[in-house]
Length: 556
Image 1: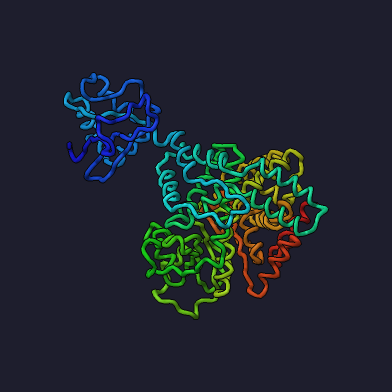
Image 2: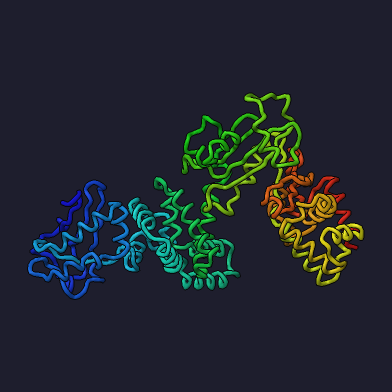
């Protein structure tokens, strides 16, 4: 032992009976690297990467013994180093191996996280799909299979996880040959009785189940399994978004995970909690790492709500922040700064509105699983509710529109003659395309905010353009702006645009400082939601519709 580190032979087989790795494909002895203080053991036990020489220790050249550390697979070295957390111990091990009295053991290894290791763990834990007839009679696999899968995956490096997920999705998915045969059978039965058709359809439905889906279901039943699968999907989404793999099987795996998580995180299984100073510390830390900011978010005249799930204790899934105000706020800075002047105890006479000013998801793996809209609807039942929402994408859209109008020579469609004169004077540019390009650059750099006269001149322009962007710009018939689409789906009314509502650098860069209130009228949300989703009708206030009308008049 050196500093608690020992090198020993596996006790499963005496040295004298150790199999020869050149002839025995499944040796039972291995090198154990054990750190007594860290209670860790790295076991290297397969022969695939062993050179032709066999270390016996006794009489073996020191040169071969000294090369032992270099022969240990890289993943094992990383695991060992991270466990003992000390380069000094690695140096001591290397020195010990070079000592002349090291003897009496054989050694062979294979990367425990290489292709062979992946194939072995997948073959072990992903059971074959039971036949249709025995699907309800097959015994469940042992819980240890799920635990082995979780531990193996957790030990992989990022690049190895990609290969592992590709192999899982590609080699253990749907049996396409069997599905094709069932599809042909279904076509052949179309003229037969309904019972036969339904049975063949059920067989086909069962055949379309990926083999790995059963493993995912079993993982969800072990402790920490649901959280593991949420994080697993986060990895899959990162692979897809980064285009690290173009495999269609990865996208199918993502679809399967999303479907399962949508079932497990249905609104009936979620719990609505109000977060306060008395909430558990681990939940408060997930809300904010800054204690001053946290005090503002859960203090007087503020409400913080979160959805939680029994399978993920201490993990808020989606968090909603609300400010209780005298009037519906038209400025995000007022909500943030107002806290310093608030009383330590709430005065109910000062509360006339509840303004939602932030909603965030804490779990990347639950992307696309509808949680935020249900959270808002549940909170709306308790409060007269309005949002103060950002308008991401407005500035980018406007710059693109100006570039298009400059090429087409249609500047007069956006601004009146008097408005263009003020822009030309402020930018010292010529009429026509030069002034349009000058305005585009001002929007791109936010330089217009530094000129009071230009700010006054652009206020009516940007307000009506923003109103049209929110109300008139569509994607497949629905609002182009993602935040607007979110609230309109939930049944909100597009209620009020607010000038200079977010004067932070980010607010000006994203939406020229404009923000919008979405108002939730409890008796109208269901009707508004149905009108939007089914007929693509946006419910908006007179202020918004008036600004849209001004834009339409100018663009004729």
